[in-house]
Length: 73
Image (cartoon, rainbow, N blue to C red; front, side, top):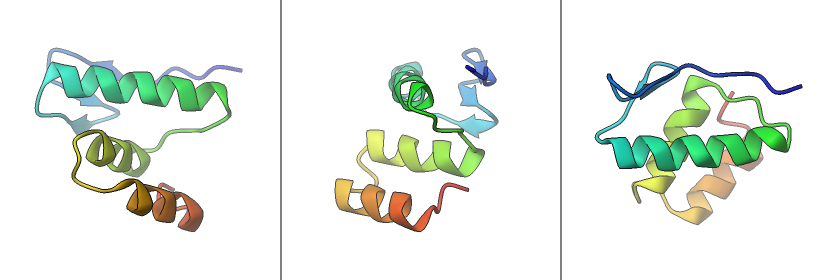
């Protein structure tokens, strides 16, 4: 079953995680939605990791490492 998450475009937050701009918020929201259809249950930490990947703050290798370690929980 699909679970909704709190997205606040006015304050640029997803589940309380702040974004620098609307484009990054929307890119991250789309990535989250795709992953949620596959069973991913987002947490604020997971959203931070995806945001940081989308903005280039972390690399794909780091993203994979975080996923393997389940750092998003």
